[in-house]
Amino acid sequence: WVQLYQKGGAPEDTEWVRYDAIVGNKHLVRGNRNAWDRVRYALTQGTARQRVQVNQGGGTSGTPGLFQQAPWGTVAQTSGYIGYTPKLEADFPQIRAARVNLRFRGDPFTNTSSHPQTSPVVMQCQRLQLTWGNFGAFTGRVGRHDRVAILQGSMATGTARPVPEWHTVNWSCRRFNADNYQQNQQGVERYGPWPFQLVAFTDGVRGSYMGPPTGTVVLESRMYDRVVKFPSGELPAAFCENPSVGGGVGNLAPIAGFVDEVDVVMHEAPDLVVDEAFTASARVFKVIPGLTYTSIGPVYAQGDLGANFPPGGGLLWVDGEVIAYQARANGEFTVATNGRGLLGTEARDHDRGARVHFLTHRPAAILAGAVGAREHVLPVAALGAMPRAGALLLGREVLHYTWTRQSGDQGSLEMPRWIPPDEDGSSPAARGLFRGRFGTAPNAAAGGEAAIGWPIRYWDRHAERSDDPELAYFQLTANEAPSFYRSVRWREETRDSGVDVVCTVRVDGKAPWSADPAATPGLWRLLRGPGDAQPTPLGATGSRIELRFATTYQPGVLDVVTGRVHAWKTAVRIDQVRVEYEGQGRIVDERITAR
Figure 1: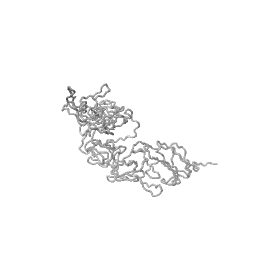
Figure 2: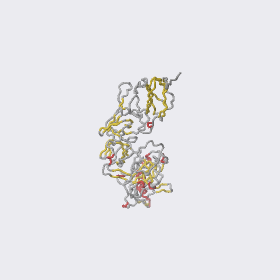
Figure 3: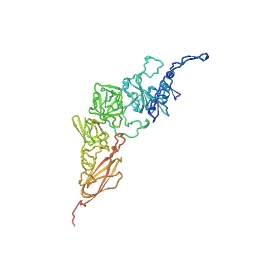
Figure 4: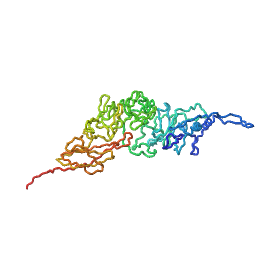
């Protein structure tokens, strides 16, 4: 088979072509005589050529009309999916009858149909192993859009390692049964004695790959040519000082960009295997408690392997989707509230045999009750592996918590309680001091929802008009005799317009830090641009001056949906802080001499 693939075209126009020979190094030929006999029978309902004898006087003898009614019936036009019926076959059903029986273009085995093609790319199809049992659900299967690597393990030695050839699957086709050679039927097109899967990629395969001989007992998969799809359970082939990630554009160039951060953790929870297919809206799914998969195949255990998964909830990776669960028992996982398609993934259906991978590197806790947008205490069913202080993703809000409490099996993630003045200066209401960090907006969350640990590089612990020990700022203090403070200036370096420096200044501590600088004498809130070298006037008299520098993050520096904005990972740099003032004259050293 080959695949006719129009890059950038409609996916449903993908067409598979079955051929028997390559003629002249350029023609794909369907030369099976039995296939052509099937076409003749479909169009004529005859198994052989009919003899017609002409008698004297023009009379004839022999078989009358071949058939009284067209055998192909009517064909309905369809659209919008691969294998759809084009208008041509709806207008002329005999064309469909010929195509289905010839099994050449739009081979029915691959569930594709024949369409007009405008300069398509002809892709070779790879034949991959599909082990017996469960329709291949518990063995390696590749599907549409899967990112896989092909490795030529048969060429590996003690010092040489195969170079991964990265590909994206465009389409796949599976055959679960096998030919019975004992019947020794003549005229039957053989597919082979073993189940298999046909796979076509979006780019041509450059290397030559051949799997192990039939019947080989594979104890070490890295010795053979193979296709690897995460999570494969395969161990690294060798130590690598400079690893590469992905295949880049067209699988030719290295990936564009740089690795921002890598987490290395010890993973003690084996992957589980889905026992029953479930949909994108399912709230419960089942796994096989005593089955996991490694690079050498299935491994059965006596106990429940799911016991290694935290009972209080966590995050799972199931075939490209991140799912939060809030409970598990006897091989059944209960999905958390709003727990499908998290962290930029999309909720999707999952088939039997899908791998269930526990995300050890991303801790999560399940809310034990609903929380509002102003709450400073988040009750959780279990703290689990949550750090004692850090950041959380709650819906589309990132927040900081600065300590935890444990009460039996349950716990809470907490931050200081803050009572800011309302906009009209009356009716203060309490709220969490570190809600809505990195420019995100505080939001409410329902009980049973996942609070996901959010890795941070710098804290965002600044809140306007507040004074709390948990705040983060850089303070400079100068004590002088009564002086006249003329101005202050500093130099700052920022990498993004959404990240800035705010400097709060007060003299002689006359005003609290939580006061309004615009309406309070002796308190200033100062902002400067990266290239601003002019001093900011103060014009205040006092004996003590205090400066607090803090980093502020504006809305837009973080996109929790796509993850394509990275300003929240940066911080500001300040130097050359200068305060200009005039003070009283002083005698630093005095010595009495004779006149």
